[in-house]
Length: 100
Image (cartoon, rainbow, N blue to C red):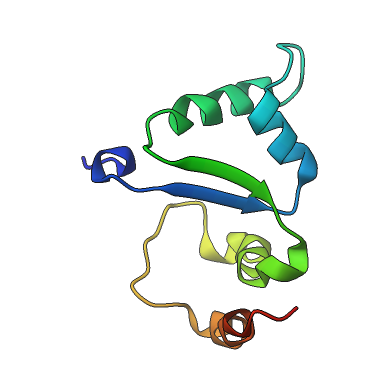
């Protein structure tokens, strides 16, 4: 099985959650409810040549927001698409303009 970190991929995480960025950057205590998840993210992050996590406003990330809201429709499996899903085209057009 080919793993992403073996392909030399860069991981750039953009989220509208300031708290998520803080937890990933600073870590958290063992008794924090997200400790295991944060630990796993940090463990994976060191495998990539580039890993960054930054905060952006939700309006600047409408495509990701729409995908997150449709995750039940998309299912839980990881799927790689070669082109955007139809419902994303209008959002990508707006995103390309760089306006929100």
